Image (cartoon, rainbow, N blue to C red; front, side, top):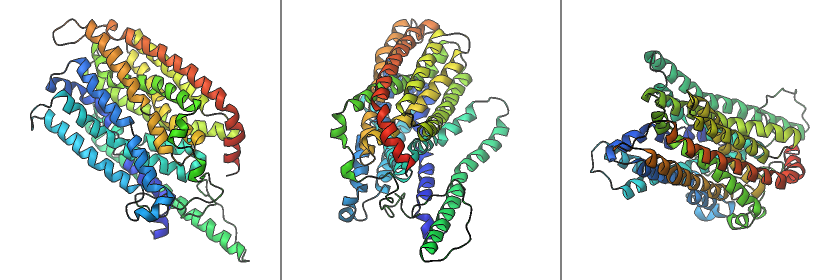
Length: 483
C-alpha cells in the first residue's frame, strides 16, 4: 500500500470509522445505571442528575469544535506546524476518556472511597466529553471530503459504535456459546470491510486520474469502466486522518468554500434558522435521550426481567444505529433527485418520535419493544440530519463549532425531561423505602408530556422547512448537481 493510498480521503474515512467504533460508551449508561445506583446509594433523581452530566459532556462539544477549527483552518497550518490537524483533537479526547471512566470504575468496584455526587458528575462529564472530540474530528473531516453526500457520510460516522453491537451478547439468554463464535466474526467483517472498499475506490480514482493525465498529453488509452466509488478529483485532495497531511482544499468542483464564505458561530447565532434548529433539537434529542437513560427503570416498573431490559437497551442501540445511517442516506437520495429540503425529514422523524412516546405511555403488553424501535430510529435520525443541515445552511468552515453548539440542546432537553419530569414524577409515585415504583402510572404522564413537547418540535421543524425550502432548491440542489 503506497503513500498515495494512505493519504487519500478513503483511508481517512476508514480511520474515522475505526475511531468511531470506540466512542459509543455513553450509550451504555442504561445497562450499568442500576449498578451505579445501588453501589453509590442514589435515588432516581440523583441518578438522573448524574446521567444529565453525562449527556452534557457527550453533547456539549463547543470546545472540540473550537479546537478543530483552530488546528485545521488553512491559515493556521504554517504557524502551528506539527501541532495541526485532526489528530490533535483525537489525542485530547483519548486522555479525557481514560481519566473519566477509570475513576468511575474504581469507585463502583470499591478501589477508592465512594465519590460525592458532585465529583461523580464531574468525572462522568469528563468521560463523556471525550466523545465530542472523536465525533467532531471524524464527522467534519468526512463532510469536507464528501460534501455532496453529507447526509450519508455523517450517518456512516454516527452509526459506527461497536459497543452497541457488543451489547447484543446480553440479548439472547439461550445459545450464548454459539453467539460467542458468531458475533466476533460479524465484528471483524464490519471492521475490515471499509478498508477493502477504500483500497478499491482509491485505486480506481488513481487509475482514472492517470488516464485523464495521459489524455491531456495526447495519449488515448483504452477506456475503462469504473464503479460507483470513482470520482474525478485528485485522489490526494483530502482532509486526512489522523495526521494533518494532505489537507489541501478540494478541487473547485467540490463543495469546499473558503473560510470567509462560511458563517462563524456568532454569525449563525444571529439567524432565525439557528434557533429553529436548536428548539427542534431540544424536543427531539432531549426526549429521546431521556427515554434511553430511563429505559431500565421503565422496564422494571412494567414487570420486565433484567434480561429483557438489557435486551431493550441493545435493541434500542440497533434501532439508533439504523436510524443514523438511514436518515442521512435517504435524505441524500431525495435531495439529489428532487431537491427536497432536508428539514422535511426532521419533521417526519420527530412525528415518529412523538408516536413512540405515546406507545410507551400506553403501557400495553410488550409496549417497550415497539416504543423503543420508534424512539431509537427517530433519535438516531436526528443525529445524522442535524449536523448535515448545519453544514448546508451555515457552511463547512465552522461546522464543528456550530453543530456542537446546537447539540447542547440534547443534554438541556434531557435534563428537563429526565430530572424535572421523569425523575420528579417517578419519585412522587414511588411508595416503597427503596424509591421504586411498579405499574403504568410510574411513567405514563411523563411520556405523554414528552410526546406533546415532541409534537411542538414537529411544528418548529416544519417552520424551518418552509424557510429553507427555496434555498435547498436553488442553491443546494444546484451545488450537488454541478459537483
